[in-house]
Image 1 (tube, rainbow, N blue to C red):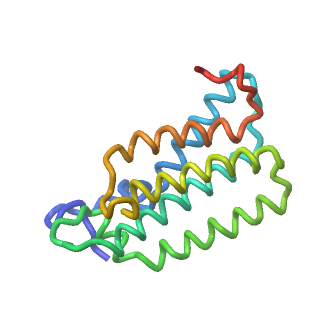
Image 2 (image 1 turned 90 degrees about the vertical axis):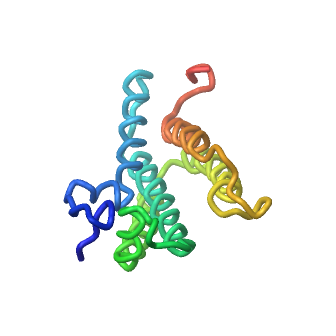
Amino acid sequence: HAISASPTAPFRWWYLPSWLGLDAPCVVSTWTWAVSRTSDVPLTLLPAAALFLVVWCIYLSDRLIDVARCQDWSKATGRLRFGREWRPLFWMCLGGCIAGLFGVLWAGLPLEVIQRGMVVAIGVSVHCLAFVTPIVRGVKLPGKELGVGLFFALGAYACLDITPSMLPL
């Protein structure tokens, strides 16, 4: 499989973390760890694993949606063409994420984290409907990245036992 960033650019192995959508879960995990350190709130393994897997699920799903909706492959980025060529791998990773999430739940993810995560999930779902899948008005709304940053931050705080007075508002 010889996929590259542009039709003439060579493939580089260091593209893989981004092309597989692993950059986002790594960033949000690092961000959450940094918040936990500066807040003196421990980040335990199960919430950290849940956050990583949820974010990766979102990014894998977004890539699969983009691949399914691409109208002009001659203008597609290398990342999108990689997603098309390796679609079965993306589905296997998505299945692995979902299985991992069930494992984290089974292992005893704290109820408070689940409750806070569900609140964030409602917001992410509305954001997806407005900015990813053009259900509202039939077109994608501008400002997708602002929402992504907001939900990254909210997800980070949902994993930690932070009181409202500790939030940087």
